[in-house]
Image 1: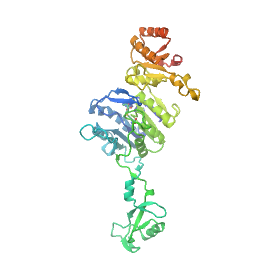
Image 2 (image 1 turned 30 degrees about the vertical axis):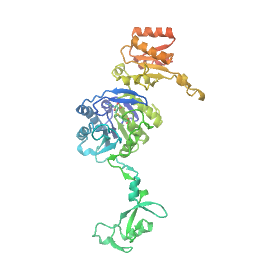
Image 3 (image 1 turned 60 degrees about the vertical axis):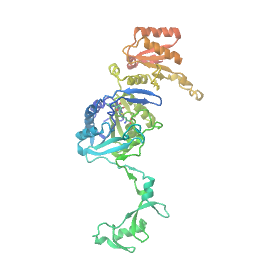
Image 4 (image 1 turned 135 degrees about the vertical axis):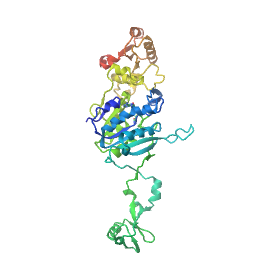
Length: 469
Ligand SMILES: C[S@@+](CC[C@H](N)C(=O)[O-])C[C@H]1O[C@@H](n2cnc3c(N)ncnc32)[C@H](O)[C@@H]1O
C-alpha cells in the first residue's frame, strides 16, 4: 500500500481505495456539529470566510459521519487504535455511534483535553473548556506504549523527601514489611526488628550491600525508590498539560481548528511504533501527518479541501524538509471545470491563485479587488543589498467564479491596478464577455497597462507559461 500521500477528496470515497485492515492508528477530528457558520481565519490579518456548515442537526451530523467511520473501522488493523476528537456539541451521540460500529467492548477511554482556561466567562453557566477524544481499539491485542509526564515539583517535594548523602539522588520509601502475616519463611530478624518481610534474607542482604535500604531512626528497614529510575507520572485520561495553539505560537498556520503537535505526538507515540501506518481522514492543516512524519511513521492524509491539502504540503516542505513528488505526493486535486464550478468561492480563489504560482492576499475583507499577487521569477533578488527590492515587483490577480466576467468586473480591476500602480495583472474567470475583452484592449491603449484574461480552461490546460511570461 502506498503511503506518504495526501488525498484530496471526501474521505468516504478516498477510503474505498484502501484495502481492509491496513492501518495501525487512525486519528480524526471532523468538523463539529456547531450548527452555525464557522469562520476561517488565515494568517495574522483579518481575512474571514464563512464555511457552510452542512450539519443542520445532530442527527444529520451523525448520518454524515456514520458511513465514513464504518470505512475507517474496515481499514483498521486488528492491533490498531482509533481516536475520534470532538466536543460537547455532539460527543454523546458520537460515542453511541462508535459503540455501534466498533462494539462497546472496543471502547477504551474518553480522554478529556482542557483547551483553554478563560473561555466563555461572559455568559451564564460553566464555560465549556474541554474537547473529548474517544479512544477505541480493534481488539484486546493493541499496540501500546504507555506515556508518562514529568512529575510536578510539588509531587516530588511531597513524596521524594530523602536525598542520598554522597550521590545526591532523591528517593522515596517503600515499605519492606509483608502484608501477609502467615509467611514463616519470610519471618526473621533484621537489624533488631523481627517482622514478616517482603524479601528473603538473602535478597535483603544483597539489597543492603547495594545501599538501597534506608533505615529509620529506630533502625526499621525500608526500600529506597529513586526518582531518577522512575519513568514519570503515567498519563491518565485527563490531559491538562498541553496548551492549545496560541496566537503567537510558531506552529500556528491560521486554521482555527488546528490542534497542537504535542497532542498528536502523545497519541501517535502511545498507539503506534516506528514504520506503522497512521491515517487522518479529516486532516485539516495536517498536524497528525506532521507528527507521524517526525516520529518516523508512515502516513496517509485525506481532506476534502484543496486549500487544506496545499497547506499540508507546504507544512511538510517547511517543517519536515520533505520534497513534494519525491518524499510525498498530493493526489486528486480538482482537475475539471465541473469540479471547480461547484467549489466554495473561497476554495476556488485559493485554487486559482495557487495554480498561477501566486500568493493569496491575506486581507480578504476589503481586498480592494486583489485576490492574490504574483512575484515574477525574474524579480527575485540577485544581490544582498537588493534583498527586498523585488517585493515591489508584483502582479495582481483577480478571481471571479463566474460563467462570464463582464465589463464592470474589468472596470473595478482596472481601478485596483491604477491605485496600486501596476503595469500587468491577471484576471481569472470561466469566460469573458466580448465587452470585457474590448475594455481590456482599451485599457492597454489608454494606460499602457496589461490585463491578461485567463480562463479556467487555460489554467487546466497548463498553457500558462507563455501567458505568464
Ligand atoms: C477540524 S478540521 C481538522 C483539523 C486538524 N486536526 C488539524 O490539526 O489541522 C476538519 C477538516 O475536515 C475536512 N473535511 C470536512 N469534510 C470532509 C470529508 N467529507 N472528507 C475529508 N475531509 C473533510 C475539512 O476540510 C477540515 O479541514
